[in-house]
Image (cartoon, rainbow, N blue to C red):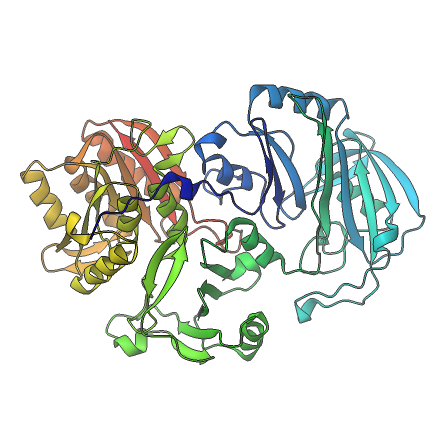
Length: 555
């Protein structure tokens, strides 16, 4: 079989949230429920962070203005100093035209009015008062959307059918400006509980139109983004980031992050995998049925338990609850790469979807803004990558498609064979790469003794594992030992990838466990990029980030 290398052209597609791009501008349609930027160092990425680190040409992306997390709609980012300067001046001079659409269930007192006030912060809210920043908004009842008949997709939160659509044109850009002034003028936004809005499945505020002078040409640039407030906001977020022609596997419902505590659902090709600590409830079953656009959709449920050790493969495997049974093995696509999955092989189906963006980093050879996987601009086809705890070799496949020679190391012969099948499915010759059965700590010692070194070493161990050679490994207390064992086989200037899904391990402690052995070994971290789980695993106060991953270039 001839070795196949993934061409970079196949990675040049853009996510669906991108509305427009040229040399100077990037215009996106932000979904509700996603921050403009990360609110803290270890929180989930905002749309700005996610985009800036995704493509080398977006590395200089700059924030010019922002939308609240729960507000959807148009945002323009600058890509050049000229664009940043021009757009900033236009915003400051009130020369940028913005039009928002909001829904309320309170009858407007008048067809149009202008709200002028000074807004200041009061705890988590903002309010008008005698001090603060001046804010001005023109409101008018939208004739074409007057008294919309809106129904929530969540029957628990269904509301009366009478709705009023209002257009809002802010002349200033204060935080929560439209939300505050709409509420203070008797028409709080539907779903905006913070400012007295009636309960709904989302805050019904959308940045529908954006117009400005193009920074380079001076021509009028106008953009529109339609909005369907009835649509499931959770699904809209997924549709903003997932390219369906290239990816058909993603997290559909993520617990409290999506308003469904303790319940997790993944789309896996033409199958759904539901997970929870209890059997599938009737309300959950009804929701899954309502989501099934295909009557032949296969739906499985897996009961999560801490006592999986000792359970049989049959007991640990997901159970069919709806539709026809899935084949013993089936294939999904992720970023154009094929992976084999199975519902009959135990607790895991063969792929961890929360590592999708990290696998793409290997595919693209691009880790983050100004951080390439290889130090040269051109991918080195002779680069060697060691993938420890390789499981079904998903990381290995992506690295190999990008041109690297990969060594996959795992304690399971079954999973290594699974990995070989993944290689073959993607046109890769397994014989051109190494698949090693054995204990990671033992083999790291062997490689070091033989003075074998790698350009990149990938560490993604299970939270708990046990082997005859090394004994028990617990990520919460042993991760530093793993890093120490890996450093002797990492070339100077090489890249170390460290990852854990140990939910109880704080990000600060995890980073300390990774960084401390590097310094103790007399080596230096010259580049670092930390990322939690991707956007379809939304992070919230009730559903904190559990996945912690960091890429480091180590001199």
